[in-house]
Length: 341
Image (cartoon, rainbow, N blue to C red; front, side):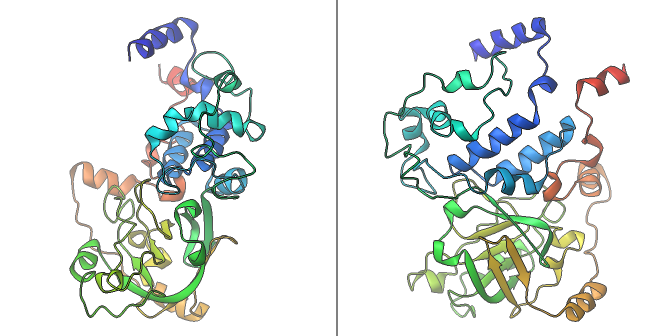
């Protein structure tokens, strides 16, 4: 922290502002590195929000385009078996970047005033099982996949490196939880009518719905199935999940249920098809039925009438735009600050 403080003071003298470092190339490098380490789906909303504030043209599709085919070479939980501490001992991120340098933009600027390639020049890998060679990756194409379809018109995401291979293409009947309270009340019911082929659907946990978009997307496996040895199921929600969580979990469905996205009208028993490899997520009902249900949908009663909750609810963007507040978009560049003075 002492060195960080020293460097920040130097940056002020050098006029090296964040707006000079937040380039499209650096965001693309971030997407690639996140894929190589088996990083969190949370990186998607964070990067979209930061890019939005800085006025950088970054969109959900970039995660597929740039990161979709990147191999996961870091053998750490939840994708692999080691801890992040072991990654540090094996050479850390500079060693990972050294291995994937052919995929990265080497001239991207950094806070040290040198191109990012300087970070990995002398890096070594000290353990080939923790940081795998490219010809022996943990997963060949492991970047976060973007899903589109009539259930997620504006996109949803899945992390293949933390999912079960056999569930990445799956069709089954939905079992719907309308709220997080509904889920908690029912998930351990011994008579819950689900099988391992059931797709668990949770609504009302997006940016507006559970204000702040909580990390509840990795729903627990129903107790009756756990007792039979089931360890994973397809789960779909408008929520987020922790980067440490394992499972075939579709997250950030946009628009969210509370904003009137099609997730809102899914019913228990509807069939859903997920194809993560093709980037598809579809509710298997006719267009007429979908349109009729959407027309009949009523937004939930607004709980917040004042204060920060109301401000947040009324201005928060959907997950595919970074779930930031709409009035902050494009408002953090140096040019903007100059104009306001």
